[in-house]
Image (cartoon, rainbow, N blue to C red; front, side):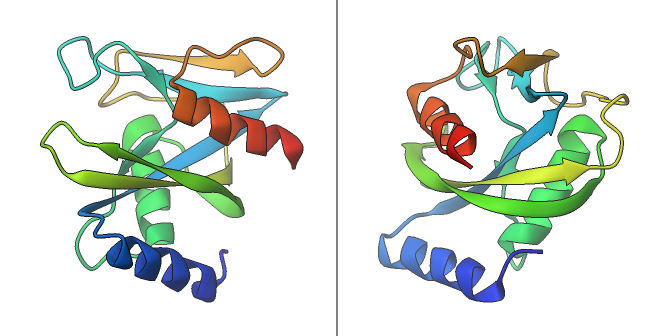
Length: 146
């Protein structure tokens, strides 16, 4: 799905930059809109809208984590990982230096979103200004350029 050399390069650069937690994010598109999830109000950065995303587990590759996280957070099955959209760094709720790697993905059936970790979801047109952080806005700018 994604070249192994790219995944190795991303992991190696994160190690060199002393990143403590790797995170993956997915741009899921359907009908010209993208899927956003709303964090629970009582969670770290509660109430914000974000891409389906989550931590890479120890021993797990970036692409494996991406497929797993999309499934866990939305119930959707990733059928393809298409484009790398770059990364951004942030400090996690536990204080770890984190780096989120973002990719476009295709999923099998967009009609069956099932939330397990978020309060709400929405399909948002990129013609609108999406209600996301500046870092995610930059990922979506790169997505529009593809």
